[in-house]
Image 1 (cartoon, rainbow, N blue to C red):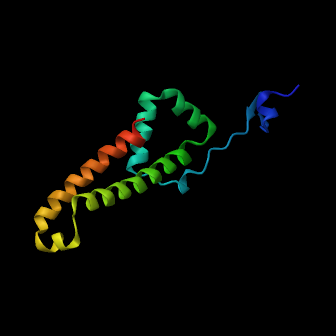
Image 2 (cartoon, rainbow, N blue to C red):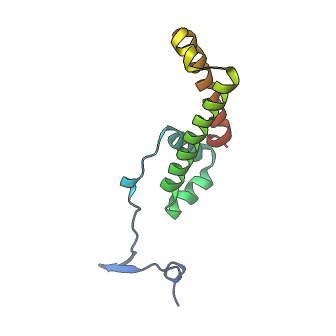
Image 3 (spheres, rainbow, N blue to C red):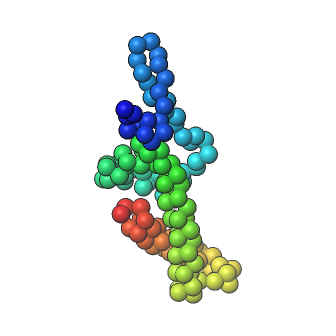
Length: 123
């Protein structure tokens, strides 16, 4: 009778007197996890332990974190663009009053960051 591991396509190798499963770690060199993915990883590790372990043991953790990071980056840019339009911040304002423009843009970036953290990262 085959083990559950063998039923799902797993194989074993024999070393000395032990039978060891042939397991391969996913190639993590292809994954670049940004700041949002790293924050979500921390959240999973400490607040959603079961979800973290499931993703880790299935080998999908890195792909999942890259996707979360990508979605967060896209959403961040979208929110910044919407807030700039809503508050009337233009390139002309940047040319006329640079420090005022910087102040408003910093405020918009902070707002967008809070929205991203609450919508996508810490859920």
